[in-house]
Length: 176
Image 1 (cartoon, rainbow, N blue to C red):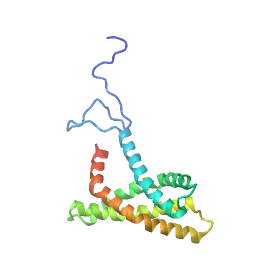
Image 2: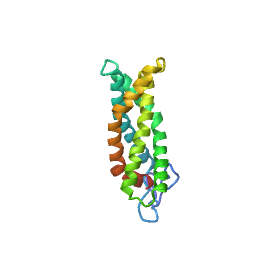
Image 3: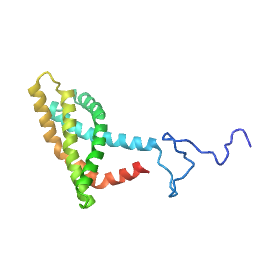
């Protein structure tokens, strides 16, 4: 064998410990962990960017510092959003447990509405803390409430769309 060639039966070890050359029992290959992480980061960027953008606009308006304030709020959202993904799993399990005879699309719709309210309040808190701060509690609470109420329709729309259409596909992709 030439020094620069690899044997045909060589398998590559993936991050999660599985081998890339091996196939699952059903004949499909396992999706690399990197692709799963990139998908989650892309979702976090799109959803978090849109919501924190609306909230930042409501807190500070379109000023010279808007993009700096928005980027700070988005970075803070990156710290909060993994908690949201964990909560989505717990909320989904809870709703599936409490409503086992309800159709899947109805359970997904309920999950989407509950998660929109939870995530909106968390993102409004982080955005108000980054754009307004805690020095004036009245201003902070007004900023939180205004950001929450204005971004809630956007968040509800996004979460319902995600829960009804994208979430089942993402779950299947993440399980692969």
